[in-house]
Image (cartoon, rainbow, N blue to C red; front, side, top):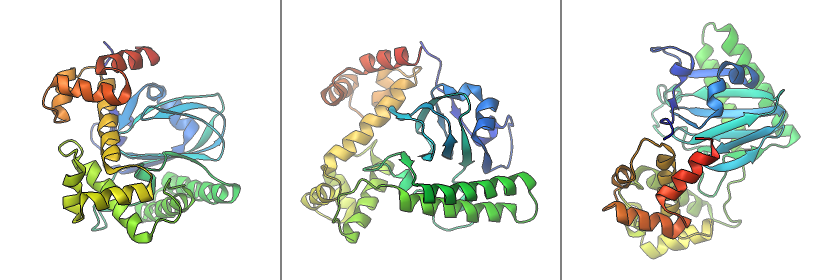
Length: 296
């Protein structure tokens, strides 16, 4: 059986049991050389943004495989699974930051998650930037790296300001996966639905439960999701449950029954039927295939 998948924090990657660091800015090559272990499957409890400026290779986010290209950027939220294998000479910029980096100074607890980069329903974790946008983002990353390296008064405020600029530029450049013609009102409701799924998918899996929280009818909610993204509300809820099931199955020290309990299934058999119906394999089969694919 494979070892339990590690979950890294900013502090344990720095080799510190206790630290006050909420953000790290570095060149990608330096980070990779310092942490060769994180090419293997792992999770973070922080946000991560990487801009590739040169090189190649492959990386995966939540079981999706991506090739590495210059001008490509990826963004990860806490809890997502990640692996990478880069070619020699691959470089770019990397920033890791905790949610508290922003919430400590603003009253909106969802400040970071309000950016579409970290809401992946209908979107993607990876985007390739055009030359103009890439140059602007790269320049801001370079300024952040310089500021992080020299420290000094108001360093954290400068880094917050520059990171917000990067988040806004990347959000404007990112395809949202939503259908053309969706009204602004429907997009706002869709974002609300996304947040509710993320907060409640373990306990609530019926569209009517979400419709009640949004003060709309189930039919209205289904019409909304079909209009904006081309999928039913039930399908979006189900996809999130299945993603979490796969994440937990990849964490090989958890028994199937434990995973069923975490996801609030009545029993192991019901969870197995649900999983096989939509993914075409049993939880045990998925785990075995995944473990083999990563060399477990």
